[in-house]
Image (cartoon, rainbow over all chains, first blue to last red; front, side, top):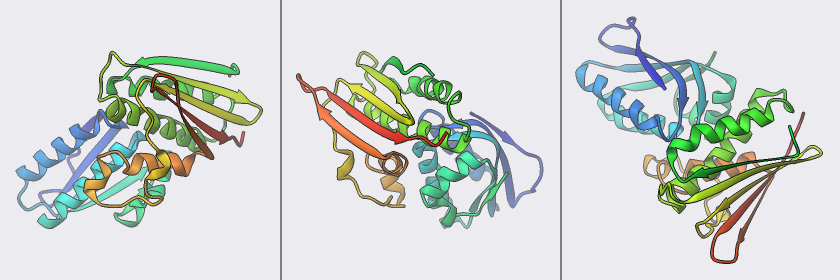
Length: 106
Length: 140
């Protein structure tokens, strides 16, 4: 999986594009990368993960998204998923994550 | 898709993409709905991931075999696992949306298998190994 830092958003809003597959192998990398970026941005309020090119999500991937949400919320940072493909949205929905965080379709 | 296809792999998480590719390659010619293909792929990967990561503790020397059999519009999925069986039915029927529950066996993965698959049978084999049999009615 590739994670690309997008230029828009400024200091308070972080935009990341995810490409490929988020599974047990790649999920830790996402958490490490997002955590590093959060540490570098003290005034951060929102993270948007752009998922147009995210083609697969396993339970481990969903678990990491939930972990990001849980761990960053006390810092006042909200997490949202944008441009989510139908296959990935279906899995998020089955797990109830679409009720816990803003998730928009591709 | 031929009526019976099988894939042998070691208990390594590195093999998860290969398992997904195997399932998708054999489902795409017979299913038109990408969401249904993905649901079956996710269920099979979750089953294999549990065996690889938890039952076999990521020992690549442990060999597992995945088998797909198509009988009419019914897909039979078999996973032959050298480790003793665990009871997929023993876990909660709803996922607990707590971080600590999601990254260990019994979290989201087993919930997804139970939601996405019509029937699950588990059998202990002679010598202590196990066979997981998942049945899914297809909507071509």
